[in-house]
Image (tube, rainbow, N blue to C red; front, side, top):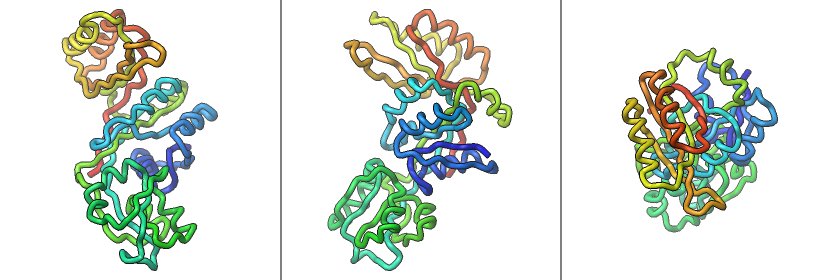
Length: 281
């Protein structure tokens, strides 16, 4: 049985993504209050695998998770792209006219802005997780609604008043699967997918054209740049770390490109090499 550390509780989107990625396998979830706790769980037990959201097609990147990943020393071994569909739920014996406030994670609330604007009578309250339905049910909180997955509503016995309330129906969250570096080879043995994607982070000399040189080399080797994100280096004014995701068809050419750009960078670190994740629809 695999132990998977996630941020959030049972019924959360992290829970759904973990079961989708490890479909057909027996897993035990370790529910964590924060992403820091996810990495702490992996560090405490090298057999534990972490799963964390890294970006959403509407809300953008979770920048802090990039830094946590770099500092953790873990390696990315996979990814999963989950279609996010929100439901508006309440206690089983309540209806629209009973509700006075709605609770959910800030990102979920943002993704349902149009729906919430249609119900200005509801007080919007931010919470730590999209599985807020559990607290409402356990506390029998009258007048409280939650925005969460339909699976969370079913798990906690909540009534679904409306499904698909997200503003944009093309709403996906990308999750990364991370593990202790010493466990990577063993975990890969159980998956036959070809490695065709990688994440890296590096800094560059503060000189003209340093980034364009790196990008030109990646282009020369037919490496597809799928994402680039810069974050300031604390305590070093006007210096940045670049988090880069690449995709490729030829693993050897990818390794050659890394060898070619290494002399041009400082502190280059490969955060993981893995197979491009599937998307559920």
